[in-house]
Length: 105
Image 1 (cartoon, rainbow, N blue to C red):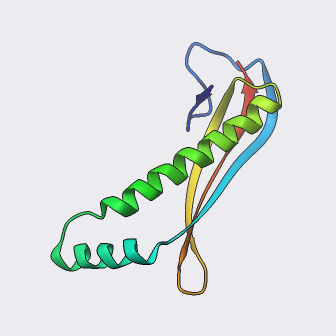
Image 2: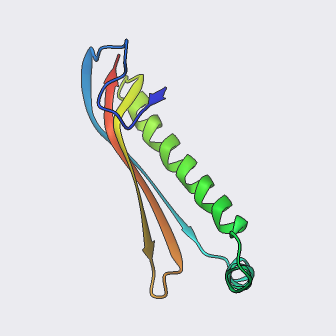
Image 3: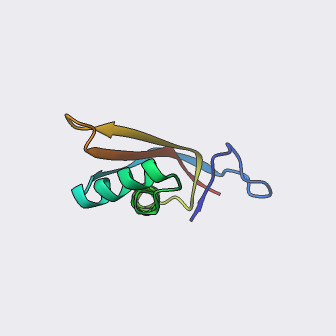
């Protein structure tokens, strides 16, 4: 499955547009990860634990979106958009959402 942020795939003309597909993943923050991330923020440097969670959530949201495209008979998703939102009373959850247009190329 090809997924791209562009509206076309060079050398692969769109044969059929199948509709909008999405993927959403919500992950909760872990108190220990938050504690260690806060320490890193004070000392400086990157928060590898948050980066790992974010990368996994993004991958899962893209896979879910691609799964919806495949269920429609598509073999590519064009115009992909990835959004991130913080949810919960204290920003304790992160949502990664993806959307795009399922197509047959």
